Image (cartoon, rainbow, N blue to C red; front, side):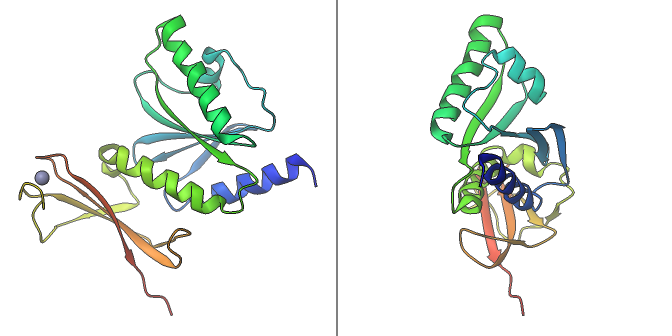
Length: 199
Ligand SMILES: [Zn+2]
């Protein structure tokens, strides 16, 4: 079995899982995919070798990353920690060399990871909570409902969003429905899951 085979399989597994969180994935290049979590931009970069475009301008151009726009970059490769570090460094150089205002967070995924979905789910959960305001606004996969309880922190009225569709979870096992709570007054952010009973 070749590297290519495992990489293609792992890419399919990643795309299969992210479909529960986005309304669509676009392929920009053979190795670059894009999707959004609500309004939050995400890129998936599939790296077959350890070589990549070290010039940050090329990375930004080919990933179609916009300056000033918070973007999460998932890198699927063999050495995720090293690559995430190197790519972050390269993007940091974009600021120093070209004065670019990049707001990119890089996350590595190992394509040989037997628990790829679990690792990915953990990463997605952290992106969702970090960029919750961007995720919930005008997101067709969520519906806003009235929350019966006030903010546990400041007792103000909160915004409450529930996923339209349940999804599988690899972290907890079974099927769950995501919900999000956002307090516009104190900034409290909560992401929770409810178990969905299936027969
Ligand atoms: Zn509050």
